[in-house]
Length: 155
Image (cartoon, rainbow, N blue to C red):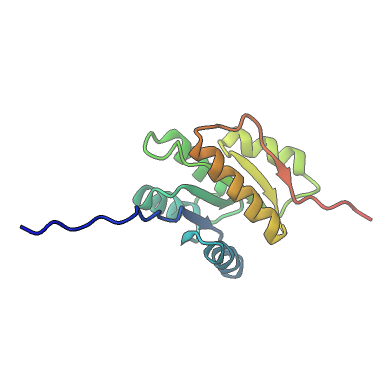
């Protein structure tokens, strides 16, 4: 029986679930992350996000907080309450900042989000935070507090 030679291990790209009810936003984030080398799945609402996360077990979830059916707050709570998915880091996104940035970031943290980013955000800010979160996850480091980014100062 012939033995197959094994070559160098092929490293699989981390998978990211992008959840946003606006198709343009979802596509933009998905394309940006795919271009950066990540495998990307998408969901349109909180219920779909929960089902998809349980099915594919992504390494990270980018979650809009204002979603139909089940909002991002509740979807995150359910994912963090589920033993199968609680380890998946959640990056919360919202367009309701900067006015309520402090309140939203505290609420996102209370819901179980691991980081918070205000929309609109720069592609660089999103990629930097995603990379940081995945690196911390890979090292087994859990963030104790939320990083609020993307707030713009009124001129």
